[in-house]
Amino acid sequence: MVSGLLLTQPDKCNTSTETHRFSLIGQLSPCFCLSVAVLFPDWAYKPAWSPGSRQVQLWHFLLELLGRGEGGAISWGSEWGEFVIRDPERLAKLWGERKGKPHMNYDKLSRALRYYYNKRILHKTKGKRFTYKFNFSKLILVNYPNLPTCQQVVQPGASVPFSLSSQGSSLYSPQDTAALLSISHPLLLPYCFPKPLPFPQVHPIQGRFPLFSAPPTSASNLSELSHLTPFNNALYLAQTLNGWSTKSSTGVFKQSHGTGKE
DNA sequence: TACGGAAACG
DNA sequence: CGTTTCCGTA
Image (tube, rainbow, N blue to C red; front, side):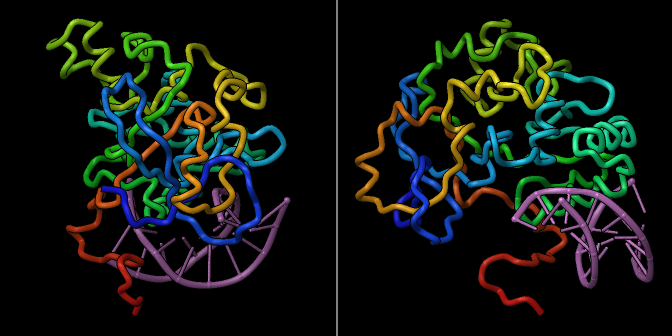
């Protein structure tokens, strides 16, 4: 399933300059009753706000707003990972404030969103106005050491990456729904903030989870994986490589599988 | 409303 | 590099 791929060790080491698109990590937590090695894309791994380093990226910001159910400006859509920008200009203003760009507007923000298409972070939900979708479909959370139990992970009523309102929730008891969600899409954990957080402060996750403080920097060999201490690596996101069929309809696939441009 | 090239910026 | 800015095009 995941053999034969370029691997990186998600801790520290900065010797190699090798490019790495995916990183590999240990095993799923026993919580998921599985034991598999999984890959995750670097975009999903990059820390939101490392102490001294990286700036907030737009998708971090979006997840933050979505996670704390900020309301008005943006909210989850009906499908998994889908979100709707309810007030584009307000969202742009918030983003502008965060980035210190007072002249931010939706035109510019949406350009930034469009740059995510090729990076596979987002794609557009066609036909639905102001509606985009995160590439969460194949994301998996693994190896979450401080993970209490599945039930505690996502509480009923917590913000999840799709709206619970109409569908599904009637089928399950709140507890079941919570457990179900945490299993099927645990990725959202870090973004399900119990309360609004002031951004540059210590992320509640950050202290506990190395993932959010130490970006992956180098490549390592499969053999080195044996040195990986599962419990040092806290929260991992994974994506299978064959996921993701976005632009099939239009047929215009710009930079995909070795097909030269032009 | 949405897309994407191009240039510029920090 | 990840946008920001601007703009022609559909």
